[in-house]
Amino acid sequence: MERDVWLIGAGVFGLLAGLWGVVFYEPYAAIWPFSAGVAAFGLGSLVAGGLQRVGVY
Image (cartoon, rainbow, N blue to C red; front, side, top):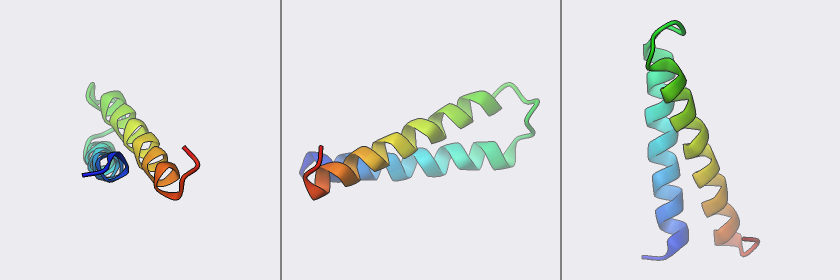
């Protein structure tokens, strides 16, 4: 598979997993910042995959 497909797939998975952790756990839980970080990196991977798919990156 192409790199953009892997980036988009990893981005969707990371974003969904991170958002699930952010929504499921309370903000004072120790895992909440980690989940927010996973969601942020997932969003970054998703954007990078999309940009690579259209030829910008």
